[in-house]
Length: 196
Length: 196
DNA sequence: CCGAAATGTCAACATGGCTGACATAAAAGC
DNA sequence: GCTTTTATGTCAGCCATGTTGACATTTCGG
Image (cartoon, rainbow over all chains, first blue to last red; front, side, top):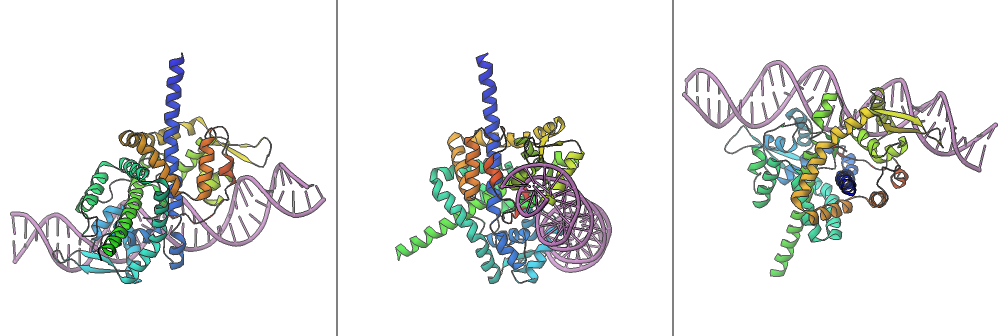
């Protein structure tokens, strides 16, 4: 009897523990993503723009297809925000050297300035959390987040991390992922998200 | 000179490290939230419904105001999804015992079933990540996520965790938070979100 | 009794997803 | 060289979910 009760309690604690993790993720992401919005709103931009600016900044000369595979949205959705960013002079498109069908995306100086402005507060928030938590905790943080990802994404991320980090050319692993794989709820909208 | 170069490198590594964390959060959240959507879609529901179901399940007899403060959306937005969930028999409303203006929200059996169904895959994903990462990493994970949250939210969360966890009555700390504080991008839409 | 609080509701609008249908240019294959 | 694929863009319309603003109702509290 005591065994059974202990077992049930174990189970309860386990579920409780898991739900706590889920909620931490929710709250942290919610607060984290809440930061860049004011800046974006000033510019008349939204989260979707932020994501695009972030990843184009991160992977200079990225192709549209690669960007789509990262964002997991349709090209129609992307074209709306991307077109606007190009029109407003945040991003320039240039034909690929080898494959001239490709429109390589790169931030302009204006785009770079906005990107830095946008991610500055977020980096500071992460830096603060890292500092408080300590190096060991940061390792755990990263390990668990990696574990939360889908297999393919984890592999892609680790490959990119092992290489020089997306800067020197977009990571082939991410590019290899098929676009529009499954549904991506969160946010939505909102989810969505506290970009990227 | 060597000092300067080292300093710059330090700085570069720091920013690189921070961006890596940001991206890990993005990817993990994206994949994490991607899971429940198929089930939701079958039911003709969206992420917003999931969030409501999750938190009502988590805080039985929660008031509308409390739920709003957790979700950080307007009552009009909430009423749309909440009304639907009530109409479809997932949630029941009952007048508060002390304050009869309140509409206490509780999951029906049908609602409970759906909630468990929905969060099952997510809990499994978290459990898997925890198992792989180990107890120590999990601690770090939680510490950093807490550090990413806004001060008030962190305090509220820790208070709720210290108490019996929302189950025995909604957490007063969360209820105390003002609704509609700031903008909440991400997510995705959405992000946000991979609910909750 | 009266003001404030908790809730609901109508109306209109913005963002950012999605599908479907095409169009174009360049690469690739035969 | 002709054909097929691929990379990209674009138009049109729909849906989910967020927002603001204006009110109405019920109930609490002093």
